[in-house]
Length: 162
Image (cartoon, rainbow, N blue to C red; front, side, top):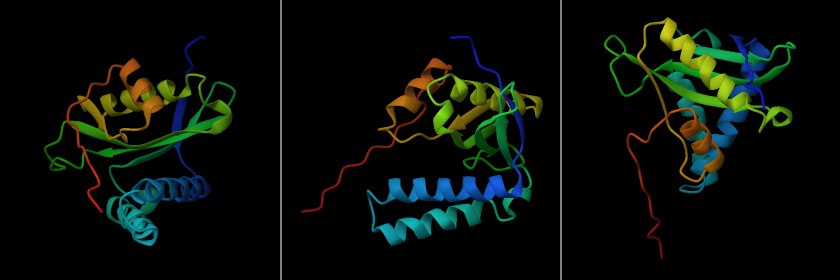
């Protein structure tokens, strides 16, 4: 398979709304494994409010759509400041979300969006791009590893409820 290429552009307001709805639903679904579903939905909404207080116009954040060479939107991403570091001292960026739309999955577009995100943050003078991935998301983990990402920390959990 030839390597895919994408161009990143700022999301439209409607694309942002759809992406936010999908991201919050996915986050709530994952958090719902550890807490009641209503609390999980509220936590997902709180995360958006905390990290994107001005939505699409939040300073320092890139909410982007990815277009292939034919102009088709194949996915999107949210790239911003590394939340683990003070914003005025960080040399790293954070990939908060990456999404490849279903018709384009397993065709190299995840790697293409990742490469375009890396180029974007490098142009801004950042020296690394970091992210979190759920431990059971084997396809995403494999993609990140194919693209040179290494595990830098690991958070483990075990339910002890009786």
